[in-house]
Structure formats: C-alpha cells, structure tokens
Image (cartoon, rainbow, N blue to C red; front, side, top):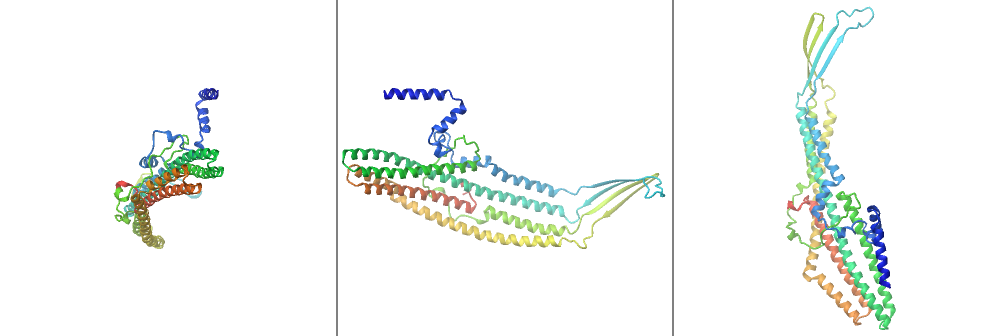
Amino acid sequence: MKYVIKFIFILTMGFVTANLSSKDKAVYELHSKDELFYLGEDSRAQDSKEKWNLEELEDFAVTSNPLYLREKQNIGMARGDIITASLYYNPIVNMQQQFIGANVKSATGLPETSFIYNQPFDMSGVIPQREKVAKQEFLATIASFRDFDRMFRLRLRQNFWTYLYVTEQINYQKEFLENYQDLLDLTKLRAEKGDISFLEYDRLALERVQIEREYRNARILRAQVVKNLRVLIGISDINSPLSIKGRLEFISTKDFGIDLNDFDIEERPDLVALKIRQQRERMNIELKKREIIPPLTLGVEFLNKGNENVAGIYAATPLPLFDRKQGEILKSEESYKKLGFDVDAKRNEILSEISAAIKELQARESQLLDYQKMGLLEKNKEVQEKSRLAYIRGASNLVTFLEAEKNYLSVLRSYYEIIYLYYNALESYKASIGKMDTSEY
C-alpha cells in the first residue's frame, strides 16, 4: 500500500509539472530544489556539461564586462586627442561692404566691398610639439589600461581560487555528513540494544548539526563568490548557469616554470605609465616655451569701390610683452619634478611589494612541499578510518572518536586553506612583477 501511494504521488506531480508553462516550470523547479537556496547560482550548473576554466573565464571577461570595456575606451579617446593636436590652424575669411554713412549729413559715395583671407602660421613648431605631447599621453593611457587589466585579472583569479577552495570544503564536508549519518544509524542501533548509552547518540547528533552548519555556510559563501565572478566576467542573466572547471591541487613554481628572481620592475604597467607621463610633462615644458612665440597671421585683401580695384597684403602677430607663459612653464616644471618623485616612490613600493610576495609564496610552497613528502592527506585519511573502525567495534569511546573526527576535518581544512593561500600568493607575485599571463614567462 505504501508503494502504491508513492506511485500515485509521483504520477500526480509529473502530471502537474507537465502542464506548467516554461516560465512557471522554471519557477517551480527553482523553489523545489533545495540546493538553489544555498548556491543561488550553480545548482543547475553542477549538471551542466559546459565548465569554464580560468583561461576561458578571463577571455570571456575581457570581451564582455562593461567596466572593462569602458576602461578600454580611454585608449580611443586618447587617439582622438592625437588627431586634434596634429591639426593645423584654420584659415579666416572676412567679407565686408560699406554703404551706410556714419551720420545724417555724411554721404556714403560709392559702396565699398572688400574680401580678406587670413592664414595663421606656426612660427615656432608648436603644432609638432603639441602632437608629441599628445602621443606621450596616448602611450600613458595604454600603460594605465594595462595596469587596470593587471588588477582586474588579479581580482578575477583570486575569486576563481576562492571558488575552488570553498568547493573543496563543500565536497569533503558533504562526504563527512553522509558518513556521519551512517554512524548515527549505527549508534542508534547500539543504543537500542543497550550496548551504549543514548547520551552518546545525542552527542553525535549534536556534532553532526555543527558540521552541517559549516557545510551550509560554505555553500552560502560559494554563492557570494559566484556573484562576484558574475560581475567580473559580465554575466548579468541569473538564469545562466555558471560552472567552474578545476581542482585545488598543489603545483610548484618549478612545475609552472617560474623563476622568482627573474623580473624587471621597470616593466610594471603603473610604473611605465608614470615614467611616460613624466616624459610627457618634460615635452610639455618645451611646448609652453614654444607657445611664447605666437602664430604669425598673413592676410590678403581685395577692395572694390566703383571702378577702383585695390589688392593688398598684411601681417599681424601679438607681441609677447607681458604674457610669456611664465606661470604655465613654472607649473609644468614643478609637475615634472613631482612626477619624478612619484616614479622613485613607485619603484620603492614595487620592490617592497615583490619582496613581500616572494617571501609569502616561498613560505607557502615550502610548507606544501613538506606536506607532500610526508603524505599528509593519506595519513590523515588512514587515521580517520582506523578511528572510526575502532569506535564501531567498541574499542574506543565517543570522546576519543569525536576528537579524532575533529582532527581529521581540521587537517583537511588547513591543507586546502594553505593551497588556496599559496595560489593567492602566486597570483599576487605575478601581479607585483606585472606579468599576469603565463605566456610571458
């Protein structure tokens, strides 16, 4: 009878869901899957055949993220500044006709018609120098974008490794919970037989509640990480599954082909941008000095008055008696000195940043290499299995068993946390030397 009721219930639910519209069905599935309340993003993605690795995430992000693309537009804007700076002065055309007397008694005589053509000329090379300054700013904009790209990829990779770290936590905690349920059933059976007290069963059940709480917290944390990844890679549709491909496994810097002492701080994009802007300011000083000599305007005039036709030429230029760009020259000189200090300060900052990143990376790697030599995970698993077997056979008490279980979880958590911190330190090192692409090594 029990199986008949189950069959009728399943058949009824299948009929109801089959008659739902696609939108209603999606809503029904969303509220009928418990995982979505913890993941919020990837319970469907876990069954998705399409999984993204780190390289695919980066490639998609740099082509789809609006914030990334917005920053890239600065390069096109700087290119427009080059075009503007390279353009020559426009000519001036003036047409004039005189036919009204100045007062009532004056006679205008024959009307006068004049045509004037003026052309300013660059006498001191202002336009070529202005174009050089604009080109330097263009190069600085490219360097600034490369620095933005460096920090963007660093943040994306940090979230990627966080996702893998939390996923490892979820995987072993889930397995742990399943094993705990078997132990609970066994303990309950032993308590009912009178072999042990029901107090041991209650303590084991309370311990399982604690582990389940950590398991749920880890899934909530992964949902937050996925939210950050969606923002970074530019996926706005929450119905699009996002599944990450990869495992949190230790790979040494030697296997990556990375030499920690092979770097050049002069290649850091932010330092490059500062140095280029310093050179731009030096060129700007020369530009301001050239602007002291104003453009020379040459004009041609043609005048017609009755039968009289007169042509003439003239030249005009401002006299730099008072304003000789003194303030702008001084400002550019001080700005050049300021940028020089900025460059020196940035060099010191980069050296300190690289040194700290190398020390952290070496410390994490050394610890993981020691764990690898001693076979930490294998020994931890072996001790756990022996402890469980001893408890099942009645060779150990509940206190000893629970302590061994806590140690097992603690070792797993510490091991994966160190791997996560190792990869974070590795990405920080790459960012500190300005090489976020492995092909650059």
